[in-house]
Image 1 (cartoon, rainbow, N blue to C red):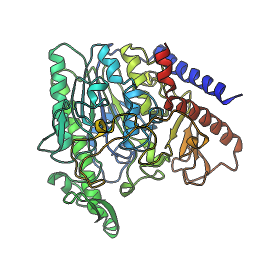
Image 2: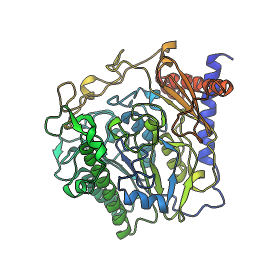
Image 3: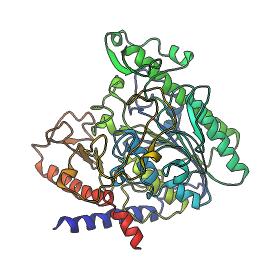
Image 4: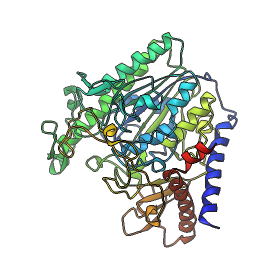
Length: 512
């Protein structure tokens, strides 16, 4: 079979799978929520799978997330589409793998032609608001990739991450400083937005992307005090992190690093609890879908207590497996735990089905999790693929967007290239070469996970992920047929992705 025919078949299969998921009937255990529930997407920044009480961390205190996991739907095998931030955020907005539109890594923007979930829900009558980290392009008014360009009516947002007393832009205006703990600040803004939509008789779609617990780390005194008893052994190690005072890299004793990091997680958890209480007090909680996840795994300094291999930036479990819970009392009245592999790319098709909206006409990489919500799916019908595109960090080729429009405006604490803001990039890639298939990548089906080039030098590693979440026992030599099966699927998927990257989806849309 030719590669071109293989790609066409994959595109048809991917689109048909997403469409069939969006049209499937609910299982027998379905309960009723409204056709237009309020929807709140919450995302932590660099929050590792293991850094929750309900996943067994030995020290981190997350009572609110623990309660949500105990009363709602706990997605035990949920993944970020990428092991770094900007790409995963693009997958949430589009339902597509970020390599399809050139969002290869942090500070790589999305492309303006992409169709986002807020654009879809806006057409369905939703008031759409974004609060916190955007990281898909500058949030300034003239950026073609700001939240407003992707369907959000209101936004109080930052180009990248933020700490205490964050400097945020409201609806693209000049950035302003907001005094206080950052998670609570974005929650307070979101509460006002949700209440305003309620007063107007409109359902609300609210995206809250926290700046925590991304480094540099800081915390309120009470939250820091809660972690004063970390193990003595941590004092013997140190980690390279950003100084809150200088914005430059420095070495800090590991117990102090983790004390501040855990304090940020606790503050974020508390802010989520404040939102839940507010929704209860205003009568909105029963029919509000709250969905929490992280954008990627924990960084290397936060490996403490993790049973998973590796960390942020890698396609092993420690880089892409993240905490995720859904709470929606009207539709999920009893506690549930799902073993189904799911991913941030599933969010768009899930919300489209729940609200009765059509899916975009181009290939998607996610599928609807409504059957999971209704207890009718126990195994994902198609594998999930991961891929860190082997791109020049500075980019090559013709800029996709005028570089002046890609310049950020919201300051942060950490210096990069001598400045306290971040600029973005994206480039045209009109042709596909064999070298474009390179880079660390993985394919995950229900039982097996194949990792290609995860450790460099073109290695192939196969893991029975159900029995070996630590990815410690490589089965590639003993099960070559599984390696070949999964690698063929991965190659077909990559061809589909590269067709999108080179503009094939947009050309097809224009032709129609």
